[in-house]
Length: 151
View (tube, rainbow, N blue to C red):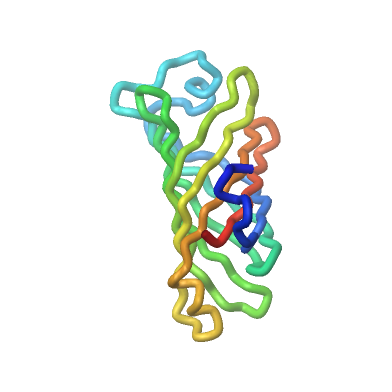
C-alpha cells in the first residue's frame, strides 16, 4: 500500500476482469513485453473492465480505461466507469493516474486519483470526497485489484 493509505478510511475494494483491448495501430502486448518500443506518438489502448466492489461503497463496476503508454514508457490511466450499488443506485467513477510496470513481471502497480459523482440524495456526500486508490493489474491473469481511500 502507498503511504497515503495510512490512517485513511477504506471506502472500497474491487477486483475487476479486463476485457479485450481495443488497439489503435500498435500492439500493447508487444510494447509491454519489450518486443517493440512505444510509438513516438504514444500508444493508445481502450481496455474495458468489470467486476464487484466491496466495502463501505459496494456494488458492481463496469467501465473503460483509455490508457496511453507514452514514448518514454509512462503509463497514463484515464478511467471512466459506472458503479451500481446493490439497490440500483448509480455513481459515476472517473480516475486518472499512473501505471508502474514491475520489471520482469506481468504486474503493473496502479496509483489513481478518483472522483465519484451522483445526483442520488442518499449518496450525494460522495461528490465532495477526494479518493486516492492504489492496487495492481496482473496482466497474466487479466485481473485488477484496487483499494480506494477517502483522503
